[in-house]
Every structure is written in structure tokens, then in C-alpha cells.
Image (cartoon, rainbow over all chains, first blue to last red; front, side, top):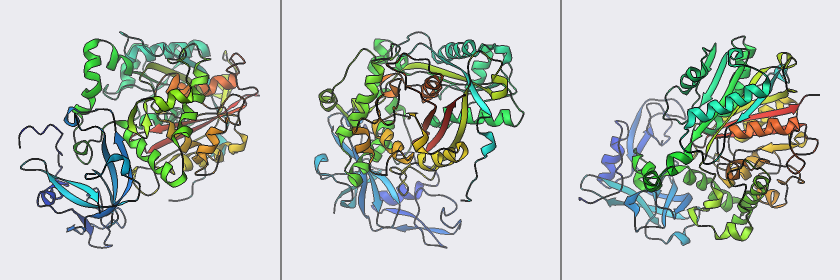
Length: 135
Length: 397
């Protein structure tokens, strides 16, 4: 899809599986093979137990809004005409907190701790962004 | 983490012996290195020292200038026994004082210049072309993941997450953030050098200001300034031969929640808690012993959160504390007595180290001087929101 003006994620070798899974509409993160902690961001060693064994697992996509902000000032021309918009810290049901945005809700209706569910926005042919909507 | 025992033998052993500030606010055509030069020469004059006396240089400037200490060393014409440029954002400036003390204590330096300078106003406003680009250019240069693709740009949003969560958990209000803005502006109105010194503000003005990243409006956000500050650190023994009565370094510490701003309670119980705890322990003081404070005010909510974390009120009671008038000159804890970064000028906390020292020298006109101030606590915060440093200063008897 040409004409997409927002920045696209620039994956690292360690985050590439996240974006590959997102493209297939799965929310996926590494799960420790020793202590079972699901971690974000991806890392070689588990931050809880130091274990190196891990596998990428598909998550439920359920979570809640830990905190959120509403942009009223334009920082990037990709959002021209889309102000105000919400950026949120989502606490996933499996534990980790990740950054995303909310759709399907007016900024004024968002509250902390509200339940949300992932959905995937195919912003280009190659990239799908995990966003969240009220559950 | 092992319980730490800050070294109390360092208490009062080292001192700030000179302070300097550059021209502040809108200083076009000068640049950060020249501004910090200005501040350093003022600080050396204040101390009665020369560049040839300096053997330690801990200075920082815009992050895009590589090895800033070398740039400044060249301008001062000195080699240094000890020099570097730190990378803890707004927590770096107090950390430079801390590192200076540690270097002197280790016998690796004797007179250390600590400073910071920036030209943030000129970079975004100096001419029409820059001004037009300014609004969006920085964001468009950001790249990465788990941020820009979702529209996350700038420091305001990261802090606004904390502000929002604080409001949610403790019922903190925008009016309470506004009380911080107004308290600091009143001080700026008494500070002829302050960037916003000539502009008075009311709560109506605050509530009518345009929103930037909600819950922050424009008046929750610190200034873009051309500004530099510097202090000279040496031993209290050496200080006796110098021009000024020394300002004693009573305690210091740092803490960095480098596991991340989004982890646990980090955004509402910040690294300021453990940092101040260890600084108090070194100083042998508690919050009840502090006469005034200079609190890193990148955004209003961070002041409120740090005041709680520093023990001036209970966690969650910061809103009521700041609304009580506590921060004003006749209040319980006069805070950011120069106007702070919200109203004086923004030099990433360096001007607040200077202001803390000057309050204890008692140099100001009564309308700005905290009467009888003997102790001041200064905070530094930054490094992508997770780094903190604390300095407790005392007047020499």
C-alpha cells in the first residue's frame, strides 16, 4: 500500500519473529523454557531467571490499559488530520507491558485498567501492527 | 540487591566553591559550547580560580556532539587528569558532581568543573526555516520499533503516562499540576534572568493553555532554552583558601530504574525514592531537615512524584502538598526558587545545582532568598525517564 506516511517498525534480528507473527495476525513473544516467564523486549537471557531456553508463543491478545496519553500536537506528518489520537501502554494478560495504540474508542472514553483485545492493522502489504480495541 | 551503606565519611568533605550561569533563554548565534564556556568562566571567577587550576572536567552538551568534554577542554586550553561526558540525560548533571567528588576522593583530580550547556531554543527557533521544520523534524528522524509506528514521539508522552497513572491511582488533578507551574512562575517573576520572568500566570491561564500530550498542556512542559550552568567542586579543605564560603556537599546518591519506565510501579514510584534514601543516609538528614528544594521539572507531574518519593509527603498526597502553597517562598518547602526549568530556563538540571548552592550562600534579595536556608536538596532525573540522582547541600558554618 503506497502512500502510508507513518513510520514503519525497524525490526532487529531479535524482534523479527514478533513482526513475522504480527503479519500472520498473531501476538507472539518469547516464553522462558525454564521459568515460563513471557518477556518483552526479546532478549537472549530470561530477565527473571537468566535461562537461555525459550520459544516464541502466541499470546491471548487480551490485556488492559495500564496508562495512556492523548496527542493533541502534531509531531509527525503521518498523523495529520488524525488528532487527537491515543497511545497506550498495554499490560498483556500474560504479564509484559507493550506500547501500542487504541482504536474503536474515542480518546475521552479511555480509562486506565480498561480491558482491551488485540487486533491487527495491515498498514502495508508487509507490515501489520498490533493495535488494541475495547474488549 | 544488597543493602548499601553510603559512606558517611564523605559528608562535608567536598564542596561547591563557585557557580556560573550563561545568558539564558533566547541567545541566537552562540551555540552550546560557547554558552558552557561562558558559564565555566563565570564559575571560575566566582571561585577565584583559573583554568590552569582545573584538572577535572565533567561536562555535557547536546547529545549529538561526540565527547563533549574534549570540545570544551580544547576551548579552555586544558588537559585533564579526569574528564568525561555522561549519558544519564537529566540525571547526568548531579551525577557529574558525584563523580567529581569520587574522583577527588580517589586522588585522581583536585578541582573539577561540572557543567552542562544546550542551545535548544536556537535549534528550534533561530530562523524561520528552522522554526517551520522544528515542529515535526525531530519526530520524523526518529526510527525504531515499539514507539514511532504507534505515534509515540517526544519526552512529554513518556512522562504523561506516569502523570495519567498517578491521576488514576491517587485522584491527582490537572489543577494540582497547575499549582506547580504557578509556584515556579512566581519565582521566575522575581528572577530578572528568567526566560519567562516577564510573564505572569493565573490558574485560568493554565487551564486555558492548549493541550500537547494529554494530560499535559503547554504549561506542564519545560522550556526550550539556550542555557548553560557550571559549578566548581573541590575539597572543603582547599575551599578555605578560596574567594567564597564553600557550599558543603552533605550527601549524594543515584538510582536508575533501568528495567524500564513501564515495569512495575516505576512510573509512579520512581528511582527518586531509593536515590534520596541513600543521599539522606550519607548526609545524616531526613526530609524534615531540608530547608529548600530544587526538583527536576521537565514536566509538572514529575515534580509532584519526586516530592513524594523524597519523603516530603506520603505517596499519593503530592497533589494536596503542592496545592497547599508548600512550594512558595513562605511555604513548607520553597522549591525551584529560580523558576526552574518550567519558567527560568532548561539546562537539564544544571541550573538547579547552581540555584541550590546560591540559596545556601544567601546571595539573593529577600524576595527570592529562602530565609536562613541551611540545607537544600537537588534532584536530577532523565535518561529516558528512568535515571535519578540526588544531591544534598548544606551551608558552611
